[in-house]
Each structure stands twice: as structure tokens, then as C-alpha cells.
Length: 269
Length: 224
Image 1 (spheres, rainbow over the protein chains, first blue to last red):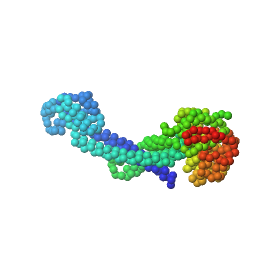
Image 2 (image 1 turned 30 degrees about the vertical axis):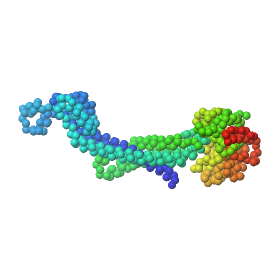
Image 3 (image 1 turned 180 degrees about the vertical axis):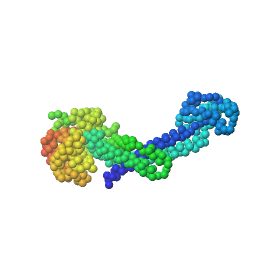
Image 4 (image 1 turned 90 degrees about the horizontal axis):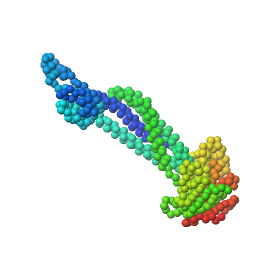
């Protein structure tokens, strides 16, 4: 019982931290994908009196990624496809140039406004439509989800760290006397901390396996059984095999830092 | 005979406070049995601490087994400590380890094989009259028995110097006699240097010894 208690008291906060880390990784992976799709589906409309090239747009704002000219005939057809050819040709000459502009990232509304103002500085640009209402609602929802999730992960990590600090105090109480005695008999720092290192190492690996197991179950059991489309679409992104390695490394690093801090704080009597 | 401890104008103090040991000079040679006595708070234990590097000299020189303790590196200090046998009044055993494991701690640190450790533990526990208690834990033993484990630990690696801080304080007569016999034998048969800090020199002591005393001002005198 004492043995289990000793291990669980480190494994529990470590699993909390590792779950937080893995949630962050998975969330980052899936939101990057979502952000990419939002970016892909978004374009601004620019109206110019003269023909423009991508270089012109990029000289005004570096965030311009792609420029596509909208054919005037298509616009005329959308207005009314019963126009006669002569009228169409006349309209074509009279109409300004329309461009669809794609950006290199999914910007917030302030940045979008900045891009717009940069374009409008040139006299040849007569109008810029950013479709900011739709953009704002998409971006707002996206930002809120990101913020809420980030806060949750941060909260989990903070609690995990507090529990580890508590565990360090327990370690100090349990191991300092032995380390002091060993120091008096000439044991090296490594030898003095060997027992603690071994125990912490095993706990770190167990924590990583447990955290990986949770995500493996989420991916292979819960998500497949659920009817949540967005999760089922992204099921492969929920857990990669490499994540086990990453969690192991993170777990070992955190635990070894904790061990090191305990060991160096053991003072001679 | 070579010097094991050389002290020259040694001053010891905690921080910048009052001097604990003031301007002491003496030599302790190989095979010496030395008692250090003095009133409570005179600095006997502090002097012993400086011998195993737990307190650095404020002034003067302290040479232990050829090593200058004033600026000793951690690695050298570890090496020195691994060749010392130290006995404490409060035993300082590792409570979560068995008696056997406590006894062989210095051998384990030095990397001796399990077989050597087991043989040496058996031999020493026989000498300290604790045969059969190898697998007990310190908290299961009496104070006298715990101190005998402490003595066995100090002797386990055949140290060139044994430092003992009140080794028989508050112990029963049987345990005290066992401990004094062992320390006498180590000195006489193995030529081990022994330095004992104590309030009272045992009434019956069978080998020649030197006696230093420390007065309340931290001055050390050799009186025997």
C-alpha cells in the first residue's frame, strides 16, 4: 500500500501534465488544419482601375499570398446573361478590374483592416471588400475555442506542477536523511540520488504510458463510437505513435528536473 | 610514524560569530588513540566535523591524510570520506534499510561485490554481537544495538581513521563495553587511528591513549 501510494503521488500529477501537453499537441495539430481550411476558403475582393500583378499587391502588403483576376465577362453574365455581345464588349471596357486576394495566414480583423488600408493608399485601388462580418464570426469562434482550450490546459498544467512541488517536499522528507548519511560516507551525487532517480524514472515512464493509453483509447474507442463528425474526420490526427516518445521524453525531463532540485537542496548537517 | 591529522593555528567558527576553536595546533599520528574531552558547547563535535570536511577552517591549516581541508575539492573530500569510519551519537542509520545494508554502506559506495558485502556484514555483526539481526530494520533495535550497527558500519571498509562523536553516550554498559573493545582492537590490531569525542573517558581502558581537552574559550591542551 505504501509502495503504491509513493508511486501514485508522482504518477497522478505527471499524467495530468502529460495529458495537458498531449491535448495541446492534438489541439494545435487539428486547429492548424482548421486554420488552413479557413485561410484557403477566405479571399478579399479588390477593385482597381488598372491591371495589377501580384508584385504590385505584395509591394503594398507582404501578407498577400495569391492574386486571381476575376474575369469581367463572368461578372457581366452573373448580372444578366441576356446582354448582347456589343453591349457586353462595351461594359467590359468600362468596368474596372476585379481581383480575388488570398493571404498567407488567417488574420484577425484588425490585421485585415490594416491590409485594406495598405491597398487603399494607392490611387489605382478604388475599393476593397474584406467581408469582415463573416470573417469576424468565424475568427471569433475559432479564437474563443482556442482560448478556452488553452486556459483549460494551462490550468491542468499549473495544478500538475503544484502537485509535483508537493511531491518534491515529500521526497525531501523521505530521502534527505539517507542522502546526508551517504554524503558523509563519501558517496557521489549520482550515487546519493540513484534510488530517487530510479524510482522517478520508472514513474515517468509509467506516467507517459498511461497518458498515451488515454489518448489511444480516445482515438480507437471513444471517437469511433461517437457520432461527432469533426472528431471522426480528424481521428488520425488525435494520436500519433511518435507522441509516446515525446511524452516519455517530456515526462523524464520534468521528473529529472524535480529530482535534481531535491538533491541539490539537501544540505549537509 | 606518518601524520594522519596535522593541525596548525586552526580557528573554527560558524559564520562570523564567536570562535569555537581558537588557534589550535597538534599532530595525530598513525595508530594513535585520541580522546577529546571538554565541557558541553566547548567545540568538541565542531572539531570532529572539521575532520570530515563538514566545516571549513576559518584560519590556519588542517591537513587530513595529506589533504589540505581549507580548499578541498568536493571529489577529493568524497574520496577522503570514503576512507574514514564515522560514528555519531545519534547513530545516523538509514531507517528504511536493513541492518546488513546499513553495515555495508561504505562497501556499497566503493562498489564492492554483493558477496564481499555479505561476508563482511556477517563478520562485523558477529563482532558487535548482532548475529542473526541482519534483516531487521534499525527501528526494531534498541539504542545500544543501533549504535553497534553504527560501529560495524564505521569499521566495514577498514578505514585508516575512525572519528567517533560520543559513541557510548546514553548506552547501556554491555553496548559500551562492546564498542570500546572494538575500537581498542581496531587501533591495536589494525593500526587504525581513532579519535573519540567524549564527556568521560572509560574507567577501564586497556591500550595507551592521548588525551586532549578543550576549554570554554576553545583552546585545546594535550593533558595525557
